[in-house]
Image (cartoon, rainbow, N blue to C red; front, top):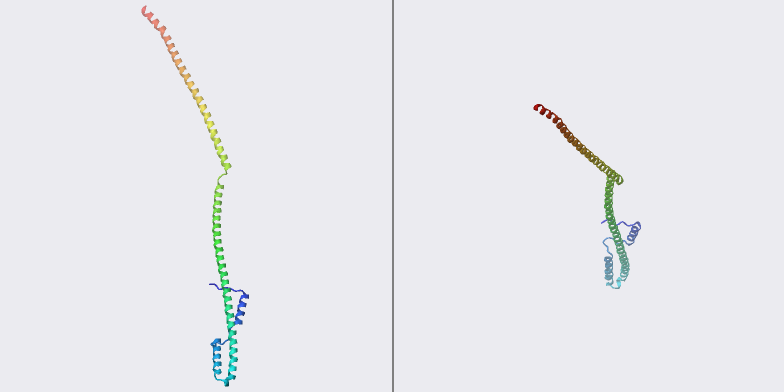
Length: 216
């Protein structure tokens, strides 16, 4: 248990009280023992009769003086006990104050530890938020992303329009080639028919002249 620290005024009061109430009887001569011895001596001289009146008177005065000293010593002892009681009460109060201060300090430390844990948690969250914010900042903004999407959609629309135009052109060319092939086929059939007719016409007169020559 830690020693209780008193104020200078309290220490001075305790020292003064001890000084005023300290015992002055030599070691081994207890007040009650001395008083009993004086009383027995007084009784012994009183039993000797009138011849010992002077000695009895002297012993009686010593007995009264010793009784007064014993009473004074008793008062001093009572004062010492009261001082010790007050000192013990002061020590107890100081000890209670110290224990209360220690308990309050312990609670404060626990509270500070909890605050430190919360602060570390908040710091970790802030660091995570900063990392996430940096990652987000690395990506383009929503406006630029939307602009890029719109541009791609525009390109796709233009490509579809160009594809439709090319398809229409190819369909028109296909129809033109089909018509051209049809005309060529018709011309070919017409040319073949004309050639056959010309061949027939050329073969007809020659055959009649030969017959006439045979008949003659």
